[in-house]
Image (cartoon, rainbow, N blue to C red; front, side):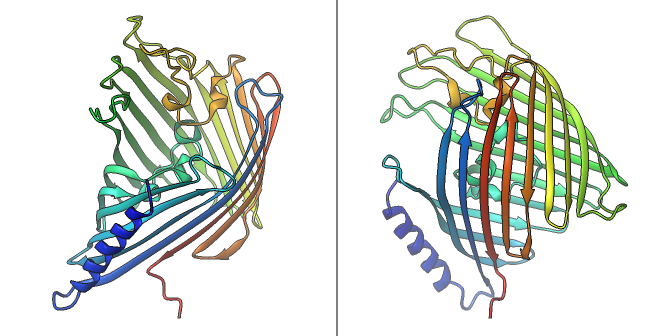
Length: 355
């Protein structure tokens, strides 16, 4: 992708602005900036490798609003990878329809990942929830006083004769939660359809579910946050090339997040099997499935029966449109400890008045 896409996006945005007058539309704008430093020292881990990642993500958009909650936006997505040569930048257009109602919302087109409001586990998406490329597809969601649900279709690859190695790939994400006072019941799910290309035949079905229950004590105790949840992670994975049928590894997961005065402790404990059983298998062309099939945290590939993630973080209150999080994360995969240092800055200017 090149900056020509951004110029095309700017032209579309200009046409939108020109059409505002005379039709009663409302001008809308949105600017989202993220910058993150992520240093991973993992020499004692079997499930992940050391790396240092540093970059920024920038998503500006302008739009028109009309009627009761309808709008359309045009903008762009820029990801800069500091120090990288290939790719140094990732540039994509963003053009999408949006509806925001009292109990229903929807998106269609190419739209930012932050439009997803479901609380998906890191094993599904890892940090791609915050820094990944835009969704390409549709989102439908509903909400009430004590419940929320959403479904997302993300079409990331199609069979193309001009690019014979490109596979047909799409994901479906689902999330639902219902609260009963401090107690809540939730479900997160993901279906990843990893299909054939012009050159390589074969399909892998990769399905994940995470039903869980929790207690949110925040309203009843003098803390900024105290949330405890526990559930069962399970996968249903089938490499149709081998004909061996589905593998269904799973395990118990418990999460606890406590915060006071901006200082927090977030711990996740997983006890169970290797959730990445097809990682080292190869397709018909001999290419390993690896990270292209498993998009979330790699630590769940442990064969030691345990993974623990302990995050100590500082999240000061800066403003309604700015968030900063400084973290020291300690990973244990049954073979050793790994240390991750993470700094994340998010600035979200969505139609706010700054003058």
